[in-house]
Image (cartoon, rainbow, N blue to C red; front, side, top):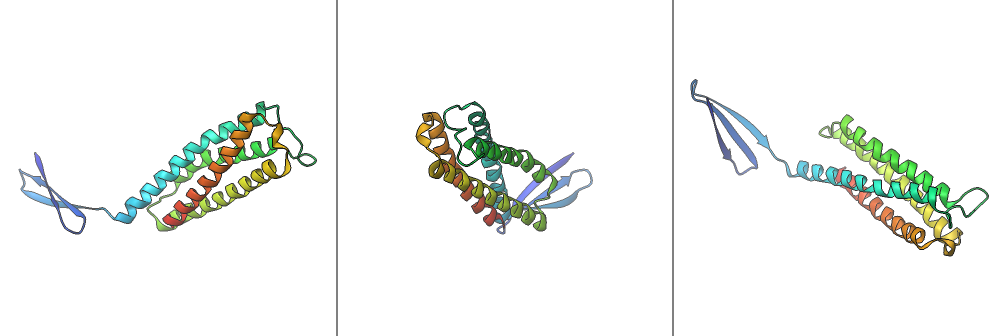
Length: 179
């Protein structure tokens, strides 16, 4: 039968002793909690939550690209339409949502090199999101007549473009913080 004693020291180390009553042997187990590790784990979890929330934008991009008949197919240049932008953005967003869990399971984020690799990939991904969002913003407000759009399409584009900029800033801030 074993008994467990716990001592907490002043340097954020928890020492746990497993006492075996029969053999009277005490073995210390040291568990250290570094504040930087906890902040990194929190940042990565927040990054995952933001990515999961991004799924709703991907679904709505696909919905409006396929089912809107008011302005999504309005030609901006010879063959570029809002339909093209929404589908490209949805495909890119879907690839992010699918590959992020795979990357997180493959990489060992306790390893400094692999954590920095993950952050570099995420930072590159964020830059692509900014470029796509800038293109969508220019197309929607600069090149096309968005007065022809249904209110639902107009409000969706307005809100989603703002949300994409906010997500981009959050992703960039989290990646720089983790680095």
